[in-house]
Amino acid sequence: MSDDSMHGFGPAKRSILVVEDNEINRDLLCALLVDDFEVITAENGLVGLEKLREHQEILSLVLLDVYMPQCDGFEFLRRRAEDEALANVPVIVTTASDSLDDEIRCLQLGANDFVVKPYNADIIMNRINNTIHLRETASIVNQLTWDDLTKLFNKEFFYRHSEDALTSAPDKRFDMICSNIENFKHYNDRYGRATCNDLLRDLASNLKQTLPGIVAGGRIGGDKFAFLVSHRGRGWEQILEEATKDLAIPGIRVKFGIVEDVSHSLAVSLACDRALIALDKIKGRRGTNVAWYNDELHQQQIVEEIILETMEQALKDRQFVVYYQPKHDLRTGRTGGVEALARWIHPELGFVSPAQFIPVLERQGYITQLDMYILDEACRELKHLEELGLRPVPVSINASAYDFDVPNLVQHITRTVDGYGIDHSLLHVELTETAYSEDPETVARALKDLRDLGFCVELDDFGAGYSSLASLNVLPLDVMKLDMSIIRQATALNDFRIVHAAIQLAQLLGLSTVAEGVESQEEVEQLKSMGCDYIQGYYFSKPLRSNEFEAYLAEH
Image 1 (tube, rainbow, N blue to C red):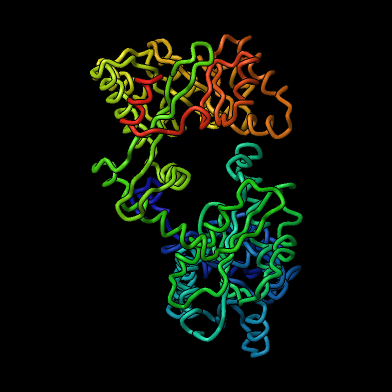
Image 2 (image 1 turned 180 degrees about the vertical axis):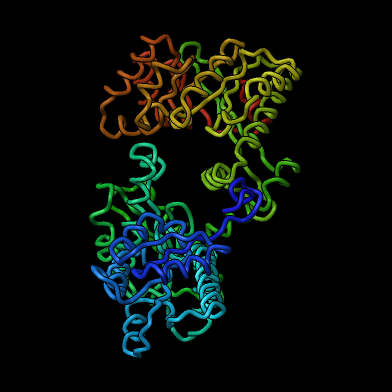
């Protein structure tokens, strides 16, 4: 090896293993190769196999004699073929025999070429260079075509191969199946990358062996696989359940989305998107692991696409309207606060439910823009109440988990509120327990900074999830909001013990309580007798537009 190549200033020489028992022939080959290649030698087949295993990562070629003691060339080729990694290194057989049977046998055992002694320097060098070139070209094509981990097509080639299959068989029916491992990031964190790679390999292998009528299979994302298969109709559940057995991590849940009768005019990438949309609808649902894309999901997808395409313009055009739902103070009988709620009056879709647009905006990263828009509108309303001579009441705004990814969130909220000259105590920040569970340390730090500045913090949806009790110990809070689901359940069962216990817990921690979704006099009386502070719900008022809210506030 030259000094330049050793120090990285020139291309390193390719390496060749010469397996030859005749010392004269071995020296002759080394003399032919040494100017262009790094040469490794072995005096028989057994040593040659050891050297091949040792240097397989760097070897470009093996020159192999056929007739040798201990382990001849035929046995060398047979053992090489048993190991996939060794079989990737090409072999040119060299022999003094001109037997056609020997040549055929070597080629059948996986040799790439055959050279007869005595050596012609030009012939052997050209055959070496051609074999190495073909191998390296195939390796590049292989890298561009296959996912190395799962041995499935990579995304681009899967799309291309599937498009070709659909085009070439216009009368044939196909289905698209996409898979996704639920909570894969959690498994990565818990078990490590190596184990999760084994999991992906196992799943890909199981699907390849189990799915009938596979046309193409590809890895289209980190833990997302896609398979174009011949149309089958229903009955996929049992097949797919079988494919998820005996994986590297027991107990995992793999979800599948299926698009039946993939249209030949539909882009394969879009067919995959639709299968993943179907899959997404069953995330978190135990016992349901297969979902089909249908007309309802198609309409939802169209609406989501319109939402995403028009979101930025909607913010500029102020299409989002803030509705205010009052909180009734059970102690004074007056309005004790209000929650600011986003509503979208879309020029094309009309009234768009928050249940439709908020999950879309969260997935696509727009939710913080909307939350900051609502913050500004809420401050504007508080200022307007002051100008009208009405008693200002605290306004609660909802904070998404994504808001806490903004480095200067606290400064932005403070700057906005101060810009309107609003007292900090009049702004309450509501967050759900799921927002806290995403990044507890960051959220707790931001909320502490807000409380230190005089803002109030409310924990929303208490009782609807699993992390509430833990969050009460850690989060700096002022208010606990009881989720409407536990109020509904208490009313249906005529059993308010859990509600009472939650209120007592809040009192023990020095927190005010707000009960959401209250709709009857019975609920009001029960909550009042238990010491609940505020009630929010249709019993007192539905969400109101700003002018309606101002009239309501003047009256109450």
